[in-house]
Length: 621
Ligand code: FAD
Image 1 (tube, helix red, strand yellow):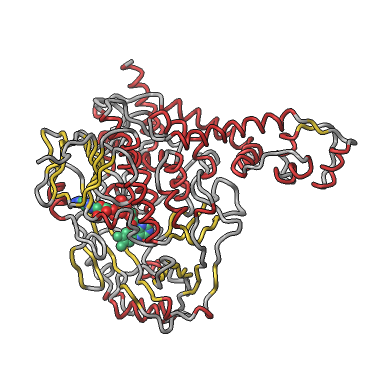
Image 2 (cartoon, rainbow, N blue to C red):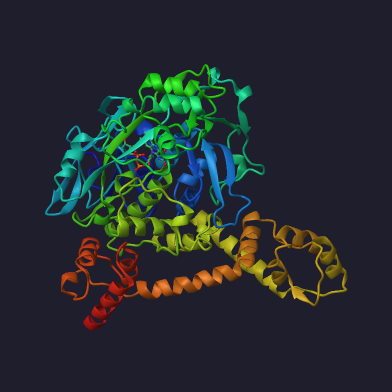
C-alpha cells in the first residue's frame, strides 16, 4: 500500500499534551505523525473551558516562549481575560482566559493543519510495537501499522477510563468518547507501575434558564491582556462576562444527605481525586465549617447557551445534581444540559521516567500529560512540548534536554514528578517553585526562547520579535543608567513634584526607578523619553524594582547548581554505602537520582545521608 507508514516520531493522542508534542517534533523538522481517536476532538477541553490561572499561566507562557500553540490558541479563543493577583508582586501575577471551546479547538486544529512535517490520522491505537524493550511503532484499531523509533503516548484520561454518575458506571475516555481499553491492557503487561486516579466535572446549565438579575457580574479586565508574547488584543473575539453565585446551607444539606449515593463516598471509586480542584461533595465534607462556597458561571462560548458552573464538580446521581443546582440563587429554574460525572483512569508512576520524559523501561517511548499523574491542560501541554522535542532530538541522534528548577516551572513540574512521584493528580502552583521571583509569567521568553531556538523549536518570526525585545530592554536600561537628574534643575524639580519626593543629590534614572514611589510610566511622562512597548517597559520596571531579591535568589541558585553538578552514576549500589538507613537506600534505589541536588530533594533523604553520598561519590572519582 502506497501510504506513509514510517515516521521519525509518532504521537498518540490529540489532547493538550499530544498536540504540543506533535507540533514541537514537527517544528524541529522531523517527520511526525499524530494519531488520535477523532480529528474533531483535537485540542478538546475535557473540563472547564479556561486556560491559565495561578501557576498555570506560567506554564502557558513557557509553552509560548518555546514556540508552542496554547497561548496563541487562547488569544484567538479567549472571551474573558483577567490578570489574577494583579495587586500582588509580579512573581504570583497570573493571566487567565475563559475560552470559547469551539474557537479554541478550531485554533489548535488550524495550527496543526498548517504545520509542515506533521501528518494527522484518525484512529484509535490499540497496541505498541515493542522489540526487546525498544519501541518501534504503533498499531491502530483497524490493524494499520505505523513505524517510528520514537513514540510519545499522551492518552489522557482514556486508559481504562470508567465514568461514574451516582452508583451507575460505564467505560468511557470522557463523556461522549470511547475509552482506550485495549491499549490500557497492553500497557499493564509492560513493567510500568500503574495505579488509578480520578477527576470530575460539573453539570452544564442552559443560560436561558438562569436568572442573571440575582447573580454578581464579573467582567474581564481593561486593558485586555494577551496570553502569547506575540499576541494582539485585536485577535480576541467578542468579550463577555462570567457570573457568580454561591452554594448555601440548603445546597450542603442536599449533598450531605445523599453522600451514601456518591460513588466516592460509597467506596465505588478507588482513584484519588485532585486535592486542589475538589468535587462539591469533597468540599462540604472537608470544609464542614463553611456554609457557602463561591460558584462561577462561566460561558462555554459565544455561540452556545451552555454555562460551566465552576466549583460544583460532582459524581452524585442526576436527581441530586438537579436539586443542588436549583438550591442556588439565580439557578432556581436551572435546566441541566449535561450531567456532571467523575472519571477514573490509569496513570503511570512518573518516577519510571527520565527527565526527557522517555520511559526507563522502553527505549524511545515517551509519556506526557495526564497519564503521568498530572491534571490540567497547561501541565499536559508543557509536558507534551518537552516529550515531543526530546523525541525529535532522539530521532536526530542528539542529546535530550530539560529545563531545571531555576529555569522554568516546567523544570519544577518534571523534577517534582520524577523525584517524588504523585499519589494524587498533580497541579501546578507558584508555591511549588522556590525561585518564584525569577520564574515569572512575564519573563518566560527571556528564560526559554533562546534555548528553544537552539534546539529548533522557535521559528524566525518569534526569534526576531524576541531579539528586538531583548535589545530594546538592554538599550533602555543602559539609557536609564546613564541619564542623570540633578536637584534644582528643571527636570529634577519636575520629578520631585510629580512623585512628591525630595532629590537629595544627583541620581541616574535606573536608580530612581528602584524607589517604590516611582514607576516607569511616570518617569517617561515627566522626562518625555521612554519606550512605547509595554512588554519592554514591564521588564525594565520589574527587573529594577526587584533587583535585590533577584540577586539573592541567584545566589541560592548558584548553590543549587553546585549540588546539581555532582552527577551520580546510574549503577551506584546504594545498599553498599554504609551508614545509609534501609529506608534511604530503598528510596535512592527506587528513584535513582541523576545528581546530588535531586537526591537531596527526595522526601526522607536527610542532609546526613547526602553527606555520606557525597563522600562515596568523591571516593569513586
Ligand atoms: P486529554 O486531553 O485527555 O487527551 C487525550 C487524547 O488522547 C484524546 O484526544 C484522545 O482521543 C486521545 N487518545 C486516548 N487514547 C487513545 C488511543 N488509544 N488512540 C488514539 N488516541 C487516543 N483538569 C483540571 O485542571 N481541572 C479540572 O477540574 C479537570 N477536570 C476534569 C474532568 C474530567 C471529566 C476530565 C475528563 C478531565 C478533567 N481535567 C481537569 C483534566 C484535563 O482535561 C486534563 O488534564 C487534560 O485534558 C490532559 O491532557 P492530555 O493531553 O494529557 O489528555
